[in-house]
Amino acid sequence: MTELMAIADKYNLAVIEDCAQAHGASVNGKKIGTFGHIGVFSFYPTKNMTCGEGGMLATWDKELAERARRLINHGQTAKYQHDVLGYNYRMTNIHAAIGIEQLRKLTGFNERRKAIAARYSREITNPAFIKPVCLPGFEHVYHQYTLGVNNRSSFIKFLETQGIGYGIHYPTAIPDQPLYQQGEILGFFTNARQASERVVSIPVHPGLTEQEVDYIVSSLQNYE
Ligand SMILES: Cc1ncc(COP(=O)(O)O)c(C=O)c1O
Image 1 (cartoon, rainbow, N blue to C red):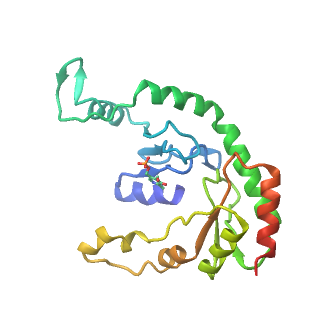
Image 2: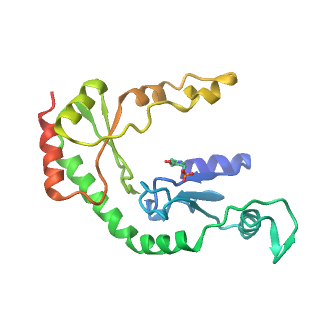
């Protein structure tokens, strides 16, 4: 983010941080969502915290904040006064109540995710897997613990026989999405395409017990 912000400053670009999977993560002690002009968070049910659905925008910029408040509320600047064309993107009180409670639990959820990830990083030594790397100064909150594996279909079959859940995040590189086939695609996206063929995420949610983590580690150690 520091490098990106330097480029953005040089060329006068706006930066929107996608923090959908990173509530609470930080770089050198600075929380994500505070680097760019806007940070956006997802509260979808699988995320590090949830409201059931919805999301949140964070910004230091008072004008942007006011504009966002207007847009989500039918363009109202005062009650029943519509100055701009807006939408109904308001969060309901019921969802907010869930979100407030989840926010109180977020640090605990993240600590649990980090502890599980630390065990995987330490205890999975099978060379069949490329493990995620977290560089010094970076606080990773492990929305996913994603492995790289050469023969994904065989690994997935193995996980299924072991009764271990998994996800593919994500199976299709963005330029290969059908929507983008309408235009000219510039670039090769070699790394993104390669990653989309090799990634497999293993369970890292805070509800996992130590016994379940033991089982996942020992299963993966035995994978050939
Ligand atoms: C990285 C990333 N960006 C954006 C989104 C979209 O979030 P939402 O579904 O809350 O709009 C997601 C959620 O799946 C995500 O993982």
